[in-house]
Image 1: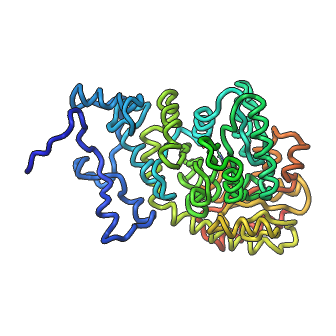
Image 2: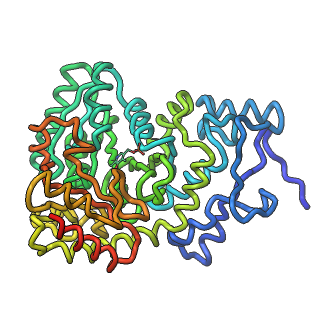
Image 3: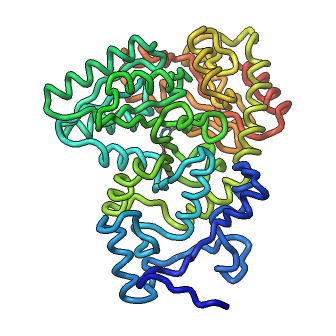
Length: 441
Ligand SMILES: *Cc1c(COP(=O)(O)O)cnc(C)c1O
């Protein structure tokens, strides 16, 4: 064994992502393969094939100099961030492995995990927006995100301008222009362009490529341009990878497809390190990181995310084919059957699958929709989505009850809209359940 000289205080590597194995003779391994081992070296944990759950609030330093070096990285006195673990509000082994594996799906440099989707979103906004700034966002947004922008950030002098999800390039140019002018007036900046696509529950798609082109045209090569963040919860990580289409930050409620078993709540952000750094610093300050147990559960979930999403997507296609021409059905908001040419164009450029969450319009109103929901036997009546089991809910009476009737009408959230998230059950059983429940209408 040769003695290598380490700079003073440089920590011994505690993790080994084994890049040489991953290359396998120049071959770039696919995410589905990397989910089984990326970022974890069993030899550093007694040979344990799976990462142990590290339940500790703090980490012992190898030496006082190593401790100083960690804090230099942590506080930005030295670039590159902390090289080792310091304290569990900042990070832990389970969370770091999870962050490594999440970033693989978008071929990104970095990722951060959070205690919920909303804590990821709140930390993101707070890291980027200051007093007098303007946020531009697509609409509709997930209701709590919309509240965060319109009710919480507004208390700190941050305003917003929104545009409808399907907006064209010309409309986007106009909105971004307005936002830039407004920010100049208030003495702030456009802090962020925040998108959600597909939008919930309408499944309207945002043209990420057009947003990015519009932003770049308006800001040219100025020192500052507002980052583009996008909530990709409905199609990610499998069917849409927004970083490839011009987004800077991808946002996830990991509670949904990534967690996938309706048994945890967590969130994530993915992007280049320069976009994650301000958020990491704020997460260190306020402690919105997810706990080690949840991170471990998510590592388990990621091993099957491609399998689960593929099966759920196939099931949804079969169920929707059955529902499409059913006499009790008034329409479907399903990305597999888009009837608008510009939405289809966005889909073709951005998405590789139609997902498994869709809107089902029942002939009738609330009474007929409730009769349908109450008659379902396999599908569970619950909000949320992306789990192994099929879920059904009524947005107008549940998730969007607090939204004004007028705004609901604007968003197309009608009394006959039932939202469905298809799971991984047997597709014929699911079709039988829908067939039977529609008889009750
Ligand atoms: C569920 C959800 C969120 C919020 O995530 P939590 O994990 O519940 O905090 C944000 N955006 C979308 C699109 C969601 O579906």
